[in-house]
Image (cartoon, rainbow, N blue to C red; front, side):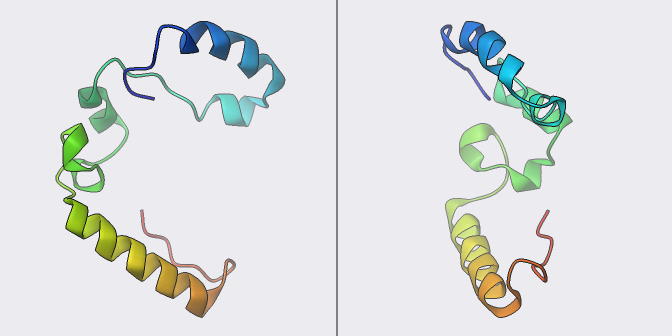
Length: 81
């Protein structure tokens, strides 16, 4: 999560008690988009978060992912990351 509201962090402390450790470990709070580059390559993030992925690229990726999903189904879906 980037630039979360001041209400979310206290709520998260309550919510995470009910989640498995696996799910809790998947959620990170970042004060800026720059911290995302520690976890994701710049090429995978949209330009609005300081990445290199243009909206047109995201549309093409989405079309290709949907077409591959229809072709291969869930079990044979290709890895896009």
